[in-house]
Length: 332
Length: 262
Image (cartoon, rainbow over all chains, first blue to last red):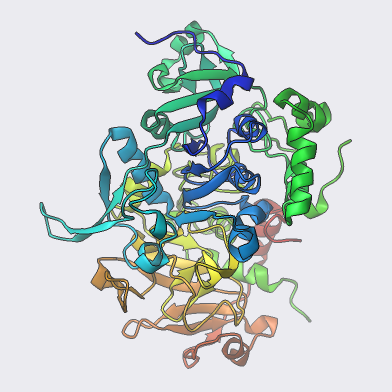
């Protein structure tokens, strides 16, 4: 029987993640990223994580910048229109900053197929994508020297197969993603782990089912009755979730549909700081290490800023927030 | 009198004109979003705007910041995941138009959004494909939109993120026509800050179809800003934006200047 009370305090999240684990962080680029939990991993000093979320956003750039992630395997790492992922970029552009970091490039469609294969428990899946692209060029395989050696890395990136069933087309077989841990932030969750997500599920359902351990933080923990009343809106069954955390603003600075928008002030400060190692380290000390907890972090962000990004209940985003960083006005 | 609009605005208007009413258009983040919304608010009300992360038939009131933005969800009929949009609809050939940006394009319409320089030690590393490679592979036609600079319109892209007409063979050792690796569709147009380029039906090489004469652009400007030799013999002046196109773009699509940088 499914354990019915899975609530843990946020401080315990890092106990579920081991150094070297492959980790899927839910959401999509600058939307619904599990930031409160990512900050916990950084405070706990996790090392050698292998990030497999497709796609990655500021949380991925941050984990790379903090030295928590040694490998990334994804279709995108960035902040959308806010600016570039400088920590990630530095690992390539400056050999002295590389620190043994490895990256493997994929695409949105194939990342989706790979995590679906993981959820289905099948080892690989065929696709018609990737043909003609350098993404499969064996000489440009970022994980080439890890294949067959690192147990978290598939033994090969792909294999061509002539369709044996129908027209005989050459298709590409690509490996399943099998995360050790999946971290998701959602609008609501029950004590039993049932997850409710609005405004786009992204690949979170598949990742939760595929991962060995799934932890969900939610804006609000709600009663079983509330989840049963409108059960069609529930996105992930409690069966696929091992622990739940209540964390209001737990995706800050990314947007959560119906709750809050992107925090442009965070992106402005982060982008400026992440341009070099020294200022990046200062930023981490000031915003993650210094406050000591997610509660302390939110106090530092401040109620006024959190009020500014709060979503309009009808629109589900903030109609007043300005998103141009070069024209941003101070709040405090 | 000098025109009262910019090259960036002309580029967005020119791209929006290539989208047709009734088409299913899979739109990438950035300038493609602006041009697609402009089309939907002017001549292509019935265009189905699809965003890979979250929305099928989106009709946003406020400009989304990315294809997962709650603004994309506000007015839509279905909130699928990328599994349905990309692996079901796109992979099975049900998307009419792919609409993409990129860092580099070559004469065959190959697109690079991965890195400048050598892949292992690049001068500039970018965010990566996202869905671009998928969209360029299996949409029925692809429209590319990007600034026209010599370092962007190159003889050969440093990395083929998204295959054009002549791309990598299945042994990844040579280049072949895209049909030879099983890809349908292909690049339809490249819309730039200087003009609109199309691809010759037989050679599959890029040629200049229109240039922004009204803004002082000459075909020589395009020749100078393009690294590879480009056919200019078919070039004719582009029709300037209408008052309506400019008004909708400035007042309804991007009043904050998020992409248009007003």
